[in-house]
Picture (cartoon, rainbow, N blue to C red):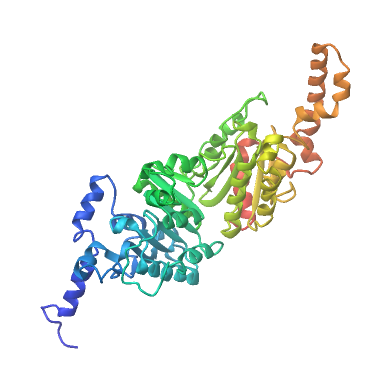
Length: 512
């Protein structure tokens, strides 16, 4: 082989120039506009997300299909990569190993035609999603953008462009490839459809997400609206569209990396919080509330807890933690909301979480403290009879080890739904000594079962005393040790030993 020439070959020089036009250095005006707003460029988000020197880009030289009306050289810079960066890479390889860290990434570039979806843009996404399906790769997608693009005048062989396979392909990855969507800024129409279809959604507080943007709303005769009035992040977090609310793009990117890591495997054991505090986690008075998140963070490796949907259906807590480095999914009741009762929205939240775990298995831990499903006419008006039983269907599809610990109340169908449909369903079903059990809440059971006797007592003080006596008797017959003695649960445990026993159970289940 001859010695390489000192002068670069013209085709290599041309390639270098062409590639440079897609980067932030050549697109300095677009970069500075982002920075002036306190935002990052698409390539800066990419560099923060993926492992260094791991990204293999697809379609970098694409431009908008507008050569018939715009200068081609100008398009190469102004519409770099046709508004979306796509490729494969590794994420978290240093912590979890290269084999577990493979991923696909798509990052919308709002500096290119407001992140709109064009002809070649869709082809790039379709190519990446087909590769993800073939290789079973998780996909992280940044979705900032304004939806469909009407200005691709080079395309003369289609009418409406509704035959693009992008949305169907993205949806078809459900159950095969984990999909994490990240958004900052405006996300409307097609971009919002991709965001909302993801398995886990992350958005910054400076996000606005809607199935139509201002122009489409006005065009539909629904009035003039500012973009910042459509689907603000706080609203979309409260209604469950956003699973994780981030401070900014850096925070959102870090969340995406950490979440993906939960599905990539085990880390070295993290710091173990002091466990003796668990003995006082439940108030001595059974009527008093407590913060279940304090229990969760005491169980978890320090700093590992990631909560999904904190602002939505607050009576159900869902998320991920690590126990001795092992990734574990968690579902819990928050007794400070509706007394821990599971309402229709809470059932929806739990069902969606269980469906995610059925598709992407992780060991599941339930922390139970519920009087059951929310009852009453208002609850039935919310389609409780369909939405609540969906928890049973979703739970039946779980194939990974399921562990459950009753912290206090384990009553009725709601408690059963928290444990996969039956207390016999979990791999290990335990309770703290504060656990209490029954077909329904104790107070309600006394009122229903002893109504005639209580109604026959005319003196209010005497009636109350008899009620308290019956309640105490029922509590004694339904406390945790009695449930264990009748083999309705597997064990009653010292709260301070909970973490250690959960880790043992995971090891015994082969999750070590």
